[in-house]
Image 1: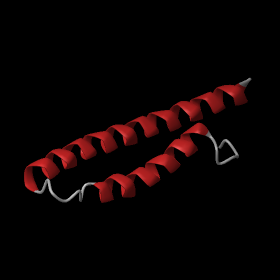
Image 2: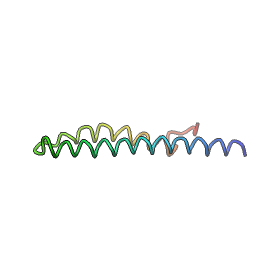
Image 3: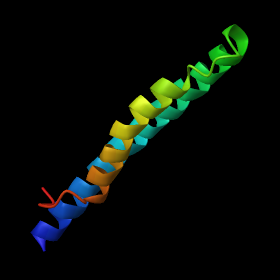
Length: 72
């Protein structure tokens, strides 16, 4: 029983960390897109940080879901 509560606490911590990462990503991407539209709308340079940060975000999502095994 105690192991189940430890597992759920760990899952909650992972999910909270992922939510913060997702919030930071979304805020930064909105800011970059606004800057893109104002400064240089003819060149889509904002796509590079969008993808470059999106890949680690996807890995963080997989970690938060427990897809890397072990559970601990």
